[in-house]
Amino acid sequence: MTDTSDMDWLASTVDVEEAVSLTAHLVAHPSYSGDESAVQRAIAGWFTSHDIPVEIQPVDGDRANVLARVDRGPGPTLLLTGHADTVPAVEGWSSDPWTARREGDRLYGLGACDMKAGLAAAMLATRDLARRSDWRGTVLFASVVDEEAYSLGARALIAAGLRADACVVTESAWRPCLGAVGKVLVRVDVEGKAAHASWPDDGVNAAVEAARFVAGLDALPVGRHPRMVASRCVLSVRAGEDRYAMTVPEHARVVVSRMIVPGEVGEGIVAELRDHAASLRSPAHFSFTLDPPYYPPWETSPDHPFVTEFARAYRAETGDAPTWAYTGFGDANLFAGELNIPTVHFGPHGANFHRPDEWVDLTTIGATVRVLLRLARELLAPVPGSG
Image (tube, rainbow, N blue to C red):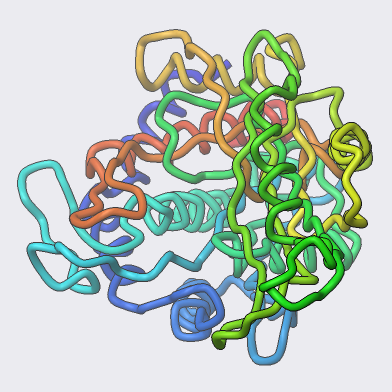
């Protein structure tokens, strides 16, 4: 358990102003998905300035993950991770999205809560653990690219042989999350038969058959789960030629996004849609393809020992036991859903994700660092009598 000396250490270690300054520094580096190099260099440079070696892990072209590893010998490995990319700035910002603006306990800026404050918290926790020797195991920090698109960074980390005993994804979620729906993207290609549009009965109209397919989707059931909600959304329907032509459309395409809950898999969703198409008795031909990105659903048991340790650290910081939440898909789906790493999604509180005037609560950045430090001290096999 964390003792009085640990409390003194936490109070002296976590500098709120440093946490705010580091978050603002990361916000100042634009990092749309596909163009994260500047902020990744800033993160690597920050670790180097604190004498912590970094590994630059290639992902795609000049895009790379930044890894910082602190090894204290045999023991568990704790992964602290987050994404460096942001969505594009939308219209309506009341100030420059890349110049962090402080008002009271809020810091405004693109990526402030999604998720550069979380990255800053994980960076500071890693740095502070590197300054101490009274624990055993490994802390692995990973700033990954492309979470807002295809999660190429997380997938590259996994492909390189990632191993960890526990993971905290420090994205904004002051109410900690223990699971999330997954995501399946299905491309449905409809092949009809071209004919002159003056005599449509001579052909098979792919646009009409695609419309029939879409119209019946709402009648199909979705998976049920006591803590997560499955859903379905048609993302696009396209048919015919871009230029005017009196021709019955012979090709159409429907793209369907399907949120899946534990127990559902991509192949099952394809089978569901194929059965639906067959029920139409359509003269057109339907083919189905699973397109990337695919995210399996995930859930960590609240009774898992890692979650118990996290809950203890969270309560020591906040005074309250966590009330667990379940969130949308992201990189945690890959670490937990593919590798089965016990995972908690937890980070500073904020709002206006993907909207103008995104903000993060400054007080929760330092609080996140303290939760991570408390968790690490319990999880990483402290050496008796060390200090």
